[in-house]
Image 1 (cartoon, helix red, strand yellow):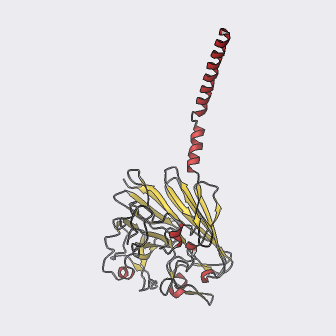
Image 2 (spheres, rainbow, N blue to C red):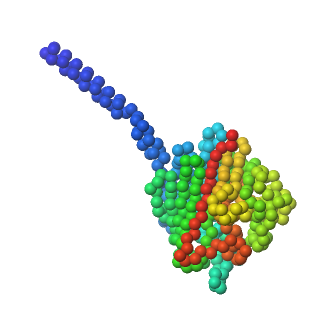
Image 3 (cartoon, rainbow, N blue to C red):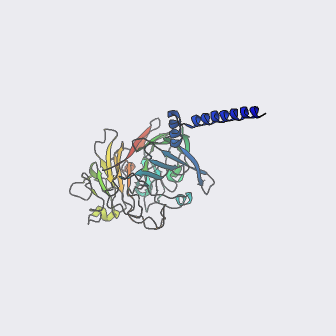
Length: 393
């Protein structure tokens, strides 16, 4: 009996040793395991963000690249709600103004992070003509039409078309004939792609079944400091433009293009936004700061450099490349401290965010000398803008 028990004990020891080695080996991380874990970490996250007052479900998507950059997008308005990039010390912070709940986006707000359409910017007196027929739009900005009307693309729930790639989100929206007064059934696709070089591409496509006008853009407010209690006046900005589009008292273009030379609108060399924003220049007084379109140089050369912004203290840099003829620089002149910060206590105060809105010029449907925004049936509207982030050493 004693010998039998010894054999049993010895067998048990060997058995458990083998099991231990097998378990240990099974938990050693192979290159395939590491690649799988990294892929799982980078995989697009999809959650419910809430529901509109009409009961439509709104989803949130989180895209993340190999550098750790992260962007959050909701289907309500196709809005970018958060965009985290590193500073020179490697600290990741959010650099776009936004909210942490759907209710704030549904309530009145200055288009934080939204896709803008059918027409970005203003149309004079809310009307335009095509082939002799006049179309009447909502006057939702004084006497003018702004950013698509009472319920533009920023206030609709977009359909998710494709999430097959972990770094790409494709959204669609169909604007029916005469929606907000615009002719034609417009089928629109917007594709967000987060690349491993820390660039975020936004691509727009649209087709129509009858002649219409279209001008799409992205309306994120940036503050590269990562601290939304700071103004953006210390950001150094460069704009690749020799001319800008002057406006009248209601922010409608006068129809001329003006040289930036010798004016506060000259950003051909990098300078701080605060350097001349309060200068006694008629255009700055009209808009309460910068709220104008710049005529981006080399307009027929496709994708090209449009602008850059640098926050010296953090080292964060944003460069914008686009196929569009113009870019609106808006310096958050009408943020008034009534909207709550997404993080911490306090509110979004005046000039705590700026916009780089790549687009055609305001009021182009009524300005024959401006690049055309007309889209014919059978044609395809296409536009691309890339927001590339980096660190200045």
